[in-house]
Amino acid sequence: MVKVGIPRGLYYYKYSTLWENFFTELGAEIVISDKTNKNILLEGASKCVSEACLPIKAYYGHVINLLGKADYIFLPRLTSISQKQYICPEVAGVQDMIRNSVKVLPRIIDTEINLRKSEKNSWKAALYTGGFLTNDKEKIKNAYKNALGAYRNERQVMKSGVLMDEFKQEIGSMPLRVIQKRSTNITVAVLGHCYTVYDTFINMELIRKLKDYGIGVVTLDMLDYQESKQRSRELDKMLFWDYGTRAYGGTIQLIENGGIDGVIAITSFGCGVDSFVIELVEKKIRSESDIPFMKLVLDEHSAEAGFCTRLEAFVDMIIRRGSYENNVSSFR
Image (tube, rainbow, N blue to C red; front, side, top):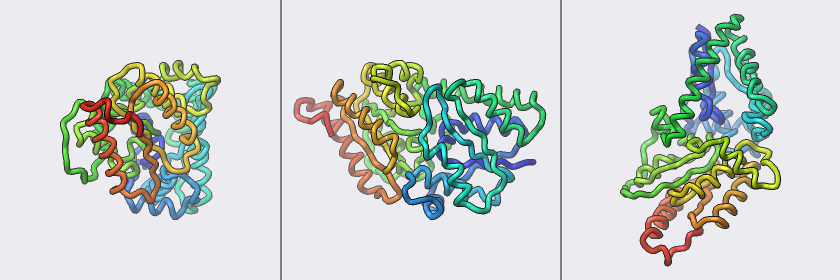
């Protein structure tokens, strides 16, 4: 049986169900790299250029982790995942970066995923990808249809308010180091790219820690993308990046829908897209609501002690604000 390796990084956290089901339907054995850990990050950072962001360095490590374990490694070239918008250039170019940095690689499934002009291009990408494993177009078509159905079902479930770790029961296995537990009726929105929100090593178990405090969590995956796209039209022109639309339009939904007691935006140091997207989000929140906002910047040198201190202070501020509205600033 042919083994296909899939790095557990970047857009794996969005499309894992689609990709895994597709390859499995075609009869391949799926090999997923280990969960992000210190060794994976160190390995990746040693091969990657120092200017790259933390998720890119981690992705390098996941590719290295698969060496010798699979016949193929699936390294899709994500150019666009939504019409008229693009993906971060580092993510779009990471495939070429890896080819030139990691010399001994198995055969690469180098599918380009470009939905900028039409979502029908996803079928072209599936046909190209399936061609590495079979020449039977009907088999590829059925595999694509079933995988797409499983993916859409997952997205629909998450829109109902289910976190990805609750859906998959596999994200987040590291032991918590936050001892004190609270029972509150607080809900916090966590904004960020899927690979920073759901990679528990990169974000130091942020969602798990919030849940340990007894806090409900809302992510961008729980919001309607088409509505976010529509709400973003209030800007002078549409945002160039897909994530920008999701974050800005999602923020408007959160403000208008209510029920959010705080917003945490997590970003990687040096992320060009976030440098202005989070600025837009923060300005929107501060100008049109009194929702507390905090930005957490992550890199491979981030200390968990300082991270936990800031998180606990933010949570305490929100809790106390509920009782002493007039005495606690809504800004942080």
